[in-house]
Picture (cartoon, rainbow, N blue to C red):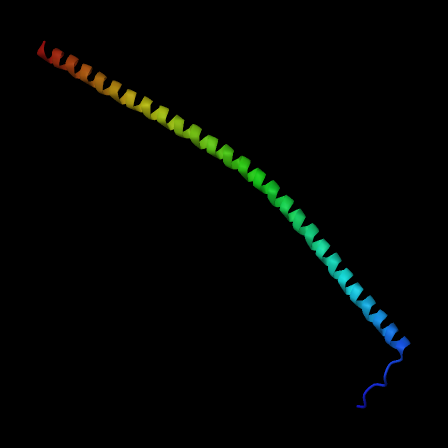
Length: 104
């Protein structure tokens, strides 16, 4: 195909403006898209921050319950040990009484 005829100065200026306007629209659309993406990212960030707060509270609460349970287990173990000692002592007393009865 033959080359297009040369453009007149006015035509070239109109063409430049059309291209400039198209570029501006593309840049504007890209900017709007970036702003929307930023908004969505900010919303996700806020959601994540809130989830972190909630999970941190739950973790601290669970940690406190675990510590309380551990202390309770220790107390109960001491009580079990005391009762076992008491049982051994009572068995020894019972054996002593039984032996004494056997002798009489």
